[in-house]
Image (cartoon, helix red, strand yellow):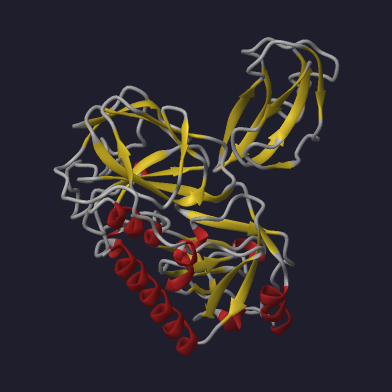
Amino acid sequence: MSTEIKSPLPGVFYRKPSPESAPFKNDGDSVAADDVIGLVEVMKSFHEVKAGIAGTGIRFVIDDADAVMAGQVIAEVQA
Amino acid sequence: MTIKVLHPGLSTTVQDLGRPGYFHLGIPVGGAMDRLALRAANLLVGNDEGAACLEAVFIGPQLEFTAPTRIAVTGAEMPIKLDGVEQPGWTALEVKAGQVLSFDYLKSGARIIIAVAGGIDVPLALGSRSTYPIGALGGFKGRPIAAGDELPVGAAASGKAGVSVPEALRRKPGHPAELRVLPGLYWHRILPESQASFFADQWKVAPEADRMGYRFRGGQALKFVAREQPFGAGSDPSNIVDSCYPYGSIQVPGGKEPIILHRDAVSGGGYFMVGTVISADMDLIGQLQPNMPTRFVEIDMDGALAARADRKALLQKIRAALA
């Protein structure tokens, strides 16, 4: 079953820990509940977004550096 | 009684109406970013309008109440839950001992105010209970609340659950948000085309916006009238000889991204200011999320004073509705 991973807060979503780094996760990867899947930048700090659920075949539905709202779906996984 | 902090949210601070009178010494006015919401929340639970509340931005805290009480949540639209059961906002809620207050995802606005009957009873610092985290001043130990904290609550006055602020009296920003601005002392520093574009362009809230300043981007960069920089001013055309920064003033470093100074702002520096957001609209800024489209609307002093009178009348209506 497909499960949505939502952003807990509004800001700018990043898929990489720094511009030169590889993404935390690529489409198709498996995730554990504690895995970081991206960062949300707001109020001059970066907040980790964790998968919150274990699953396979993660698929990101927004792009790196996209604006994001609280509760907006970031990615889907097969849980 | 106390409130146990199970989860603090993103940045949740004790705030009241602030500590005016020390800005010339570099101590910001502080206080809730949406003071109308704070007054309304306090009125709902029978407190003095300026009692200390919790202000939470973007993510609500999880709180456990150790004794029966009344609470109210105003400001942003963020679903409110008591022991998992959804509750109305802008309404006095009865809370039983041991019940847990939590929140769902923020829907609109940016900051909620949580009032509890009796107010958050932290010590006064320079006449206010507001938290100024950078100065480690006021609030609960001078910092945002953290998991494991036990927040003291004062003695409650009487009041009744179920009363609520009528929908029409809950002030929120429009979409796009409109902030009325009085052009200021340095207005002549930018070219007429930039004076026009500043008001014509649509801006949006930058993710850096916080209690100190609200930054905007997306509009055209401002162009300056050429001059030889005076002695004491920095070399950039947006620099001035150091000056006082009023609450609500809009500085535009490098002419690029306007920053509105808010409750925890610095009190002076060397950037020119295009103007000042009128006092009546400062509360609206506290409810702007990152990426929110925003327009600056020019107003004159008569218009600003009329808007202030309108805002006072709105507060009177809230008082009358809850009396």
